[in-house]
Image 1 (cartoon, helix red, strand yellow):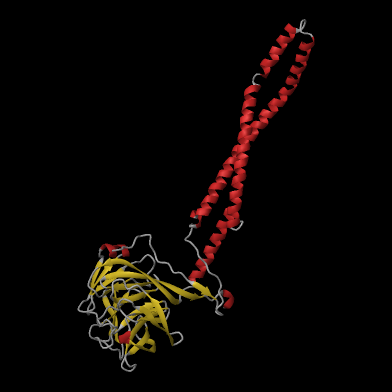
Image 2: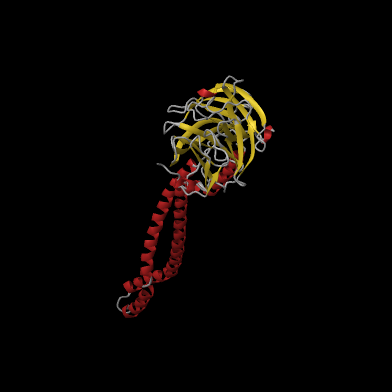
Amino acid sequence: MQTIRPKEGWQVYSSAQDPDGRCICTVVAPEQNLCSRDAKGRQLRQLLEKVQNMSQSIEVLNLRTQRDFQYIMSKESQIKGLRSKFRQIESDRKGLVNINFQELKGKMESLQPLIPVLEQYKTDAKLISQFKEEIRNLSGVLTAIQEEMGAYDYEELQQRVLNLENRLHSCMNKLTCGKLMKITGPLTLKTSGTRFGAWMTDPQASPRNNRVWYMDSYTNNKIVKEYKSIADFVAGVESRTYNLPFKWAGTNHVVYNGSLYYNKMQSNIIVRYSFETGRVVTQRALESAGFHNVYPYTWGGFSDIDLMADELGLWAVYATNQNAGNIVISQLNPDTLQIFNTWNTEYSKRNAGESFMICGTLYITNSHLTGAKVYYAYSTKTSTYEYTDIPFHNQYFHMSMLDYNARDRALYGWNNGHQVLFNVTLFHIIKTEDDS
């Protein structure tokens, strides 16, 4: 079993275009500070540091050789004097030999310290030559890297990356809604319970509130288990248990803004239960909705009424006799459960494997078994539908729950006794400030 790790997270990859369909930009941006760990950036910094160190070494050597050069220049007159003395000795070897010898000896002794200086000077000159050659080579490498990175120095590149990241984050804040393009995964968090069930988090909760609710089976149960976090859920550490006043039907429940919404068993009544008070706040019949396996999903399990939430609010998906058993979508008032608006589709509820809402569009799968895909999409914004072909990996062969969480931008699934997560890729149309 694959379990989630603390550093793992879900990311949304999005494309963008303006209202006229023209491509604005395609951005691949790493996480904050990731560029500072980029291989080329790291190589460039290391080379720059090496060149800086070498430049400092050359400066020290240069100062030393300048000092030695001044010392040698001061001895030049003495060396020239020695040369004239040798000429005198050459011309008058007999009379002046002793006197000149003593004088010459003193001059030689005074010039004795020049010998190690000259030796060091030659060594330093050789090192300087080597350093110059190495710097020349490094300069070539740096130039190549700089050209590859766009002829900007590292600090400027880093600042440009930070500016792009800020613009991208600002852009992402506008990406509240989009069209489903791809489903990837699943990530298996846990294996528990029966073949059928539901688990969920609250999309309206704050980022620090990651409580998980767990409802095993599709009938004859009214026990809801609560976990403080995903990690506790994976570890099986319960924080609280709720005993609902009514048993539920199906697996299509939802937690929204601190309340549990579920279908009361053997009825078309929707119940709103507050976790804070531990009481039923509201209950209301969903008029004309089929129940108790009259219009279930393909797998049965009293899945007639599916409650779900997305970026736009709370929804109920069901079927009625008046709509010939085809799917009906209703947007609900989360407080009173009254219907805001209703849309009738032409897709048979009994031919649907599961469904979920993203940004006011209902996406319907064609099966709950292996090979299932998102086959049909109905937009409540335009009251139009289209056939789609978006496959997803039904890893454990039987899907009895598939719900979208707008906060996590992920699909929660109950896959034959496995609690799984799917990532989604959305296509976004961004309205810029210039368009407003």
